[in-house]
Image 1 (cartoon, rainbow, N blue to C red):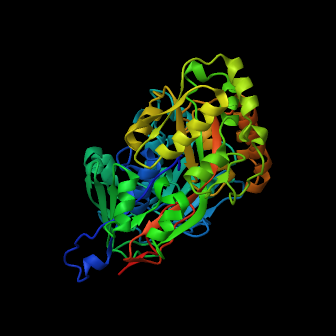
Image 2: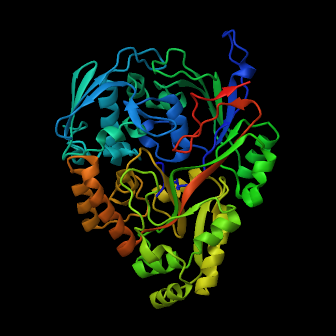
Image 3: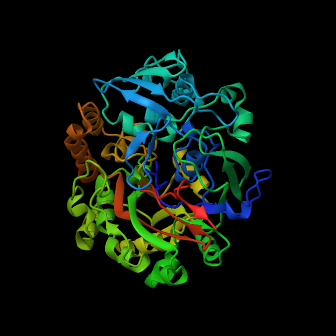
Length: 528
């Protein structure tokens, strides 16, 4: 479960802004370029194939969708769309604004969206974001290994600026969903030469692609013909990849890196980051949950009692206090506070520390061998994973040990390829602000980021009924019922804590805004 903002945990992602020249602009590039610490994107920079947080941040700079989200409130508003109209939450007529172009100068049209969505949904293309399009009529017909068609029947182009989307059933959260990467447009050049596009992606967003040095960085520069209402102040952004978050943090302290979204646990202890980054740090909640998940395709983890026992063996508050200086909130479900539709206390006693009950349940399962908990090691997971393992070991009398994976890309690939042999770090940062987004993409059978292969027909039925409610608000009770069933009956993932982000920046940055999705707002930030 990672995210959409899967955490992939999901979890840790930071962008670094480095001074890079921009010729011929008449602008002092050193004063308008930033570096931003991040993680290596898992895949090529194709919107429909990007669901993890490392890639999402770069895709968000390169592309713009029909809808965007307010940097402070996450409230959806139209971006490329002039209007999105429906009378029944099933048939949507979408009209585009004029003047939008891709970075190669070609226009953004209705076909740019329809062709991209069809490509993403077509199963032989193996796009990780395909499941987000599952509500569109005809999606199911594209999911066989050899589909008889390449297009969804629910998409119809009316003219260059208008298209109609017909869903299989009413889905009231559809408009809110349209700001996510899987719904971004693609230029005709993508379909003409995909290899060339992967080498040099062409988007329609506020920044255009400059270069990618795998394992080191991705550089983008401002697109001067960007048609959005907001324009970025900075000229270039370098997303820089460090082997360890501590190295990135040291560079921020030394003014060698401009922005780090996630402060490592070593700097959180006793509030050290506040002293080392005076007047250039923040701590705030965001729409994210940290969890650990099970590879349910491995029969060792098939017993729900085992999963429940491990949940009650974790002393969440101890980990929060010792690793995060108390700066997290113990999770009582999988949906964080401030998410529309959230209900309190969904996990009940299963998300509380009960070592005696945990050991009783665990011993009854007959689980053999040590308990292994794995996570990527490039976004400062080691401290909290080891602390979590320590509480499990104390409660159960069975060794729990950390098994690190060097990078987020390697870690996500193992999850997506269903090759996990241990319990693994997961999490979720909202793609869009809705309770639906914390359930459907992760827990529905064959969902986009259902890495553990969880499946429960009763949960699927509840989610389908919630999706089809006349309004988002009328579906909330059904989503809440599905969440309770997921946690109290099955527990395919263990909620740990709701996320806060501790960010830091160089003395050069001003007007720093971190969004509810844990990203630096590239429109607000300025540099001196």
